[in-house]
Image 1 (tube, rainbow, N blue to C red):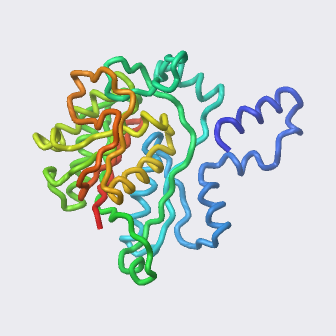
Image 2: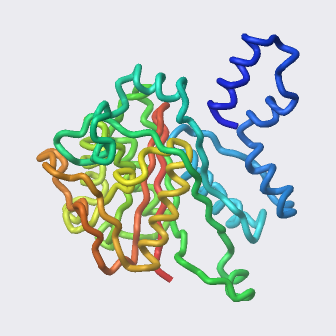
Image 3: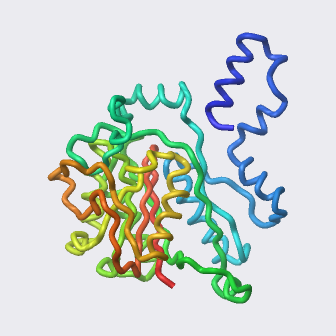
Length: 301
């Protein structure tokens, strides 16, 4: 699936005609078919759906799965995000928007969130999936519990299709903390959206400060996109896994490639080296085109 399949099928159509289109093209291109295949492979018969919200997709899938469990629709749900867009159309489209880093001579340091010399993000591919389970159900079967998902918040910028807006992310964080019953001064760690774009990183920094107040300067913030690139719809999945593992191991991953921290990005970004630390409450942010925002709150168990 993904953009590569669409490109390959179009090339086949142009060169050899419509009769050469695979009968699997349409099923393979439908967004919810990943969930469908997982359901068929493992015999999962509960809610089977796909949330599509640009770069917030993976996070929203996890948050909505938690809500389904809260509503009593299921005891266990597998949720996350996946993406495949490293293709001429994908790279060309984002390049046309001037969203990508052009540091092609040194790709290992091209993704540099919070750095003054950042110039855009690096496309990544992959998937991140987690098993969400009602607490008593998990205990009864002796499951290994890594963390508690205790809060989920959403918001819309209602501003611009692609440009960031500070108040939208702020409200998503506030809503998630309220849902979790957590005060801002209880937050220890925040896995940021942190895409390495000039506008986005400053905007998220300001949103974090607006949501957490003075306590923001006591929170360790990092962007794992510095190491993975931006997985778009898969970002919220893999980064939520990173956040849960940070809670479980009591260690913040680093934000690598901070060589010259931007004065406008003035929080503690765990620059370049992982850090052992107490993490009782962790926050995860993702934001997407269309002004869609999502935040999760995880707690140590």
